[in-house]
Amino acid sequence: MGDPRMQLRFLPYTLALKHAFGIASNTRTSTPAMMVEVERDGIIGYGEAAMPPYLGESQATAAAFLEQTAAWLAAVDDPFQREEILPAIDALAPGNTAAKAAVDIALHDWIGKKLGAPWYRIWGLDPQKAPVTSYTIGIDTPEAVRAKTREADIYKIIKVKLGRDAATDRATIAAIRDVTDKPITVDANQGWRDRDEALRLIEWLAGRGVVFIEQPMPKELLDDTAWLRERSPLPLIADESVQRLAEVPKTRGVFDGINIKLMKCTGLREARQMIVLARALGLKVMLGCMTETSCAISAAAQLSPLVDWADLDGAVLIANDCFDGATIVDGRITLPDRPGIGVVKRESRG
Ligand code: MG
Image (cartoon, rainbow, N blue to C red; front, top):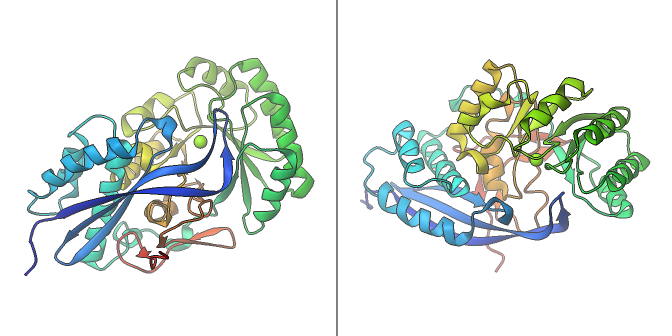
C-alpha cells in the first residue's frame, strides 16, 4: 500500500521557442513554465503552468502557490470531488491563474486515468468534431513572414500577430498573401489605440481574406471597442479583455466572441463553464493557448469539439516539448485515445 494521500510535485521548466516570437508589445525566445505532477494510488496526473512574463506570474510565484496547494491537497479525502477541490484551491490566493491551471490539469489527468477514460469521452464530446487549428506567425520582417507562412504548409488557417504600427501590419499581410490565399485570423494584442484608424485597417483587412480580429484595442477601452464593433465588417474576439468566467457577460455588445485559455481562466473546469456561458450569451468561442508543451495543449484539446475556432499550436512552436499528446493531422486537432488529458511523458534526452 502506498501513501493514500495525494502528493503534488513541481519542477521549473523553460520552454524554448523555435523562432523568436514578436507580438505588439514585445519579442521573446523562451517562456518560463512549471511542470506539475499529482500522485495517488500509483497513478500520476500531469499538469503545466506556462507563464509569459508580461502576465505577471513567474516560477517563483508559482512555486509559492504550489507549496500552499500541496499542503492543502494532502488533506483531501476524495480526489474525484473536483467541484469542491478546485474552487477551494482558487480561493487559496488571488491571481496565480497559470499555477491554478497546472493543478486543475493534473487533477483532471489523474481522475481520467483513474476512470480509464479521456476527458472528451467523460464530457460526451465527439472527437471527430475537433476543429482545425490555426498556426501563429509573430511580428517579423516580410522575408521571415513569407518563410514562416511556407512552413505552415499543413495548416488551413494562418493566425498573424499585428498591432505595432499600420505600415508593418499592411506589409505583414501582403507578405502572407505573396505565399498563400488561406484564411487569416488577426491578433492585434491591444495594439490599435485609435478607433478610426483601427476601422480603416479592419476594412482593408476584410478585403484580404481575414476572418476575424482578436483584441483590436487596449483591454480597458470597451466603449471604443463597442463603437468599432458596430462598424466593423469582421467579428471582434476578446482575449486580454476577458480572463475568467465572471468577466464573460461584460463582452455583450462589445465583442462577438471570446478567446478562452486555460492559463488565464484557471483550467479545464472553468474553461468549460465559460464555453457554456458564452453560448448562452450568443458569443462565438475560440480556444487559445500560450507557448505550452503538449501537456497543457492536450488538456485544452479535450474541450475543442465544443468551440468554433482553435489556436492550439503552442507545442508546435517550441523546441523542447516533453510530452506526446494531441497531434495536428492535416491541420486538424486529433485527440489520442488515452485516458485523462491523453499525454505520455517523453523519454528524457539528457
Ligand atoms: Mg490573443
